[in-house]
Figure 1: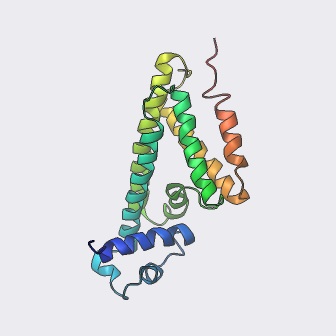
Figure 2: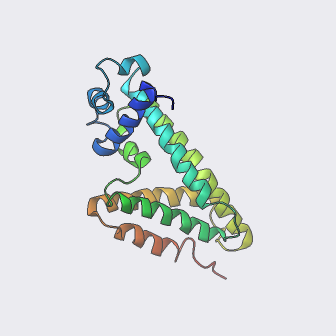
Figure 3: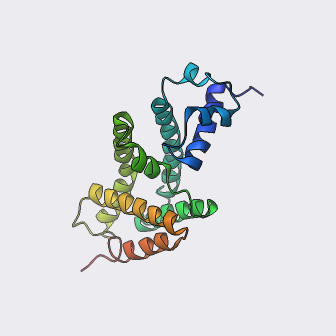
Length: 197
């Protein structure tokens, strides 16, 4: 079996360190120590902490995109059911972390955008790409009459993702699933509920 490269080891360790401590409290020394690497090895692979975090973000978004693709897959389930499926999958992952972690994209959005313009721009791009499969699913529901079409699908997708991030923030504060469950109850009884006649 091929040995994992030091670069990959640093990325894996950095991913865990960012989850546990956040951006500001995760120093390069902490990442190197978590990787069991020599001091100075970080700069052989990454020009800066900012560039490193950008790579961690890309990896995390690739993981999230896989969850989105699976949950929203057109498998005969109506669009609203697929949106529910995604939120339920994420809820189960949040439960596994004892309601303490939230979403790395949301966490880094709160913490980095005032300190790093490149990371802010990367997050803008991530949210735009993240929105697209949700907008497509919503658009399908609008075409079938399942979802109200008074609002553009892109706007509803943005609303869904932004509101869900807020629910996760409250979840972390309360260490409870109730903010997530409240969000789901309300959004599927209103925004994605029965289309008014």
